[in-house]
Length: 84
Image (cartoon, rainbow, N blue to C red):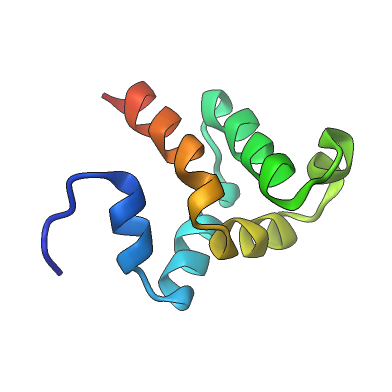
């Protein structure tokens, strides 16, 4: 796999199975500063209420996150900024 310059380009190159594994790994142990951003991305992409998104099971959150591409760009932008 070639080096990708942005997180969204990397996400687009992943297969659906790789996206699901990445999202599942994230939700297994979410960094506190990014958990809210991930739920916020789900809220925006799926037009959910925040409390409904937080109440979803972790595997449901991971599946939703894995399916979202463009709306999740804000999440990865935040991730890149926070992790340096």
